[in-house]
Length: 210
Image (cartoon, rainbow, N blue to C red; front, side, top):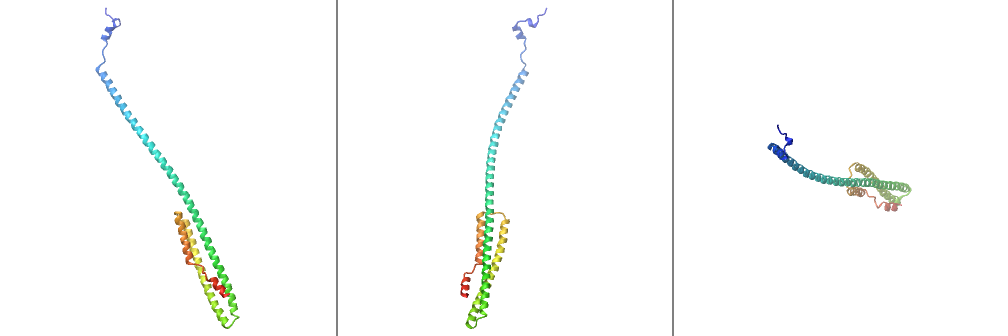
């Protein structure tokens, strides 16, 4: 009668158990080696990912700071543009008022001299001799002054119209540095003032004629 394996002692059962095959052990070692290599690769990828994260964080901070600076500069430029626009408008109003006052004064002076000339002309028709010659000479001087003032008024009106066109062009052009625009306006006003001054001898001539 045969004896079953279960009835054998433990030592016999251990002796009969077959050891692991070499092929199975080699597969385990290969799998372990593969897992170790995969683990090392994952570690390297983790380190690289952390470096990339730090790099992206640094780039983001720099980009955010740059955006803040650009926004600040844009706000400053907007404020400067608004200030320059206000100065240009104020300059246009100031120059227009200045020329209007000068034109009005010249017109009043011409009107006054024309009235005085009419009075002197009427008196001259009633006088004779030296008085006629004297007043005729005075009338000639007044006529010269009258013609000169008329020419100055015409020139002043031409300068006023030309300045109006210049100011309109300034309003349409791009805004430059406020200090440069102010200097240009002052220089233009000074040049126009120098080109058509109001004569200082007019009152003296009129008083002498009266």
